[in-house]
Length: 503
Ligand code: DUC
Ligand code: ZN
Ligand code: ZN
Image (spheres, rainbow, N blue to C red):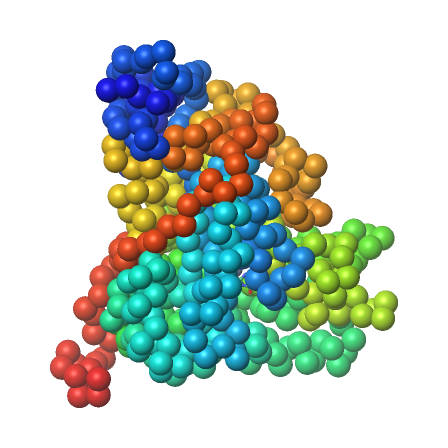
């Protein structure tokens, strides 16, 4: 076969193994055609010599917010996906967000399609955020949107006045999604605990950005996570709890998984690398802590970080996403909304951090590729699972995205050999349209040398962005797989025949 591209001299890594050295990748028409040795080349074959470096699948970031109305100073599809490819991510799944007043999802989708079409540097799909799950939407629209548009996942909020759903609404969605083979993602924090604490903090004039972390304690995540798991158990529905930050909440997930419930968990780089002291800001400028305001908040204790790293290594987490949900810092419509008449008001600071570009390198930096084996936090195959493969399977992209295998899209990261890619993260190197990175000064052991999307080099660290806006394609997704446990369970204490009496 006459390949378009051959990648030589790399060490290929998949979700299950580090393949022997010396294998080559033959790429044709944007897909991986074969893995072999001494592949034939012709005068038209482009050859990339990986010089002994690792080659991993392109990253899939399955939780990003682009061009959402509630984040007017955040990234749009152009700048967000540009930043993605510069950090090794070749697919993003972002949100099409329903507002409470929207009684149909079709106009919501049209709006996000208009904003994204011909704008992206990488491939992309949508999840819906549901804030007004009318019976018509659940009964009539979701099946059409799943089948026709390939949108097979929804995200729900248990908190935020303008977005939160009550338990009954969550249950109705879980039953509907289970019926359709859709995945339900849930933001689990107790709204009532948080709103009561916020009221007290404001009454006592404790309103610096740091009090954001005080207002959303771990117990609010722990309680809501357990409640979310219980709702999923009653509905016998698969669920993913997004952006988990608390060890106790994760222990609830682990218990559920041990009972073979289909409960998946996601975490994000900021919960693994950063602590709440960042929200205190600079000694001379406490408001700068607003740069680190996200929900759930960064946690207090280094033990929290260690516990999360254990759950990265031991398989409890299914996905690792950026939750890229930034607002500009020095902008009156961004983080500065939290400065009201010269007084910091943490509850007015937009929640969320940039991280689409730094996600993959931060995790790769903790593998044996970058650290002595005894200091590594996770294996190379586990890195691949978390950075890409599991998201592909969970969100219905398996067989096309997320692996290095014949027939898959040729989406790849070629890393630098040895320690040649060691990098200190800094804002001036970022490609987002945000004025800071929360990971400023963090050192990573490597950085993507090349990002390849469907066989085309789109990022070359020497030259910068070499892909084109508009090259990204919309991904119509299939049904997701259950990666943990199974459906068909009966809640503890319920007799097997009981559900049929009320369903
Ligand atoms: N939830 C998210 O998923 N992203 C940003 C903020 C939030 O609360
Ligand atoms: Zn959330
Ligand atoms: Zn998010």
